[in-house]
Image (cartoon, rainbow, N blue to C red; front, side, top):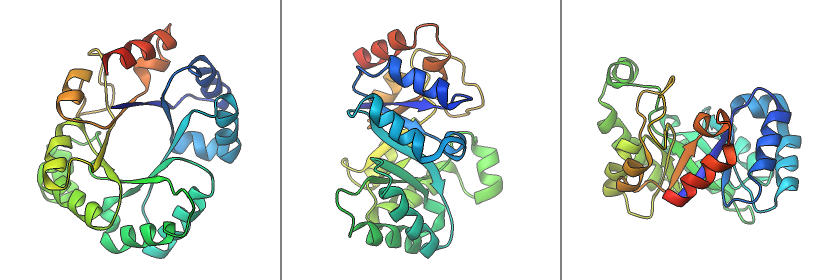
Length: 227
């Protein structure tokens, strides 16, 4: 299991300051939509300059027509990130086109498909997708697996279901982790470290419990000790 720290702070300086505090640790850094729109490629370069050992996950959740997604995927790969994500609901054709395009890229990043956002509960998910979370996540995961992706983004509670539907090596990245029982905030399907380990999550994403702490390095090290 790998720890991915969410850089969701209000400014580039705050994100970079947090990265400097954590530069000695074996972690991934998640750069989300707000941070990337605001700070762009220079932020990625500055993070790599802080520590070349950082692995970067560009969390933009791409969803568009297939050719546009393939173009975007190639552009993201050329940014030098180590992982990015697209929406599984874009369909198998779009996901396959993304992977086909990346086949010509040297050392391509990992590509994950977003299944059901962790802000959904059963009722709000069914209102949009017309099915239960488990059923739709299972379908989305099979589609992503058959399209050649490396894994999916899901809640902890679907991780084992996905691995049983695909293979144990199909990666699951699980946001909404509250390592030691912290507040869920705006997330609905959250879990602690014990549950994440039991459910075989490959990557856990932790944000607020780290960056809102008075001792972000201490919290990060405690998480790493427990995974």
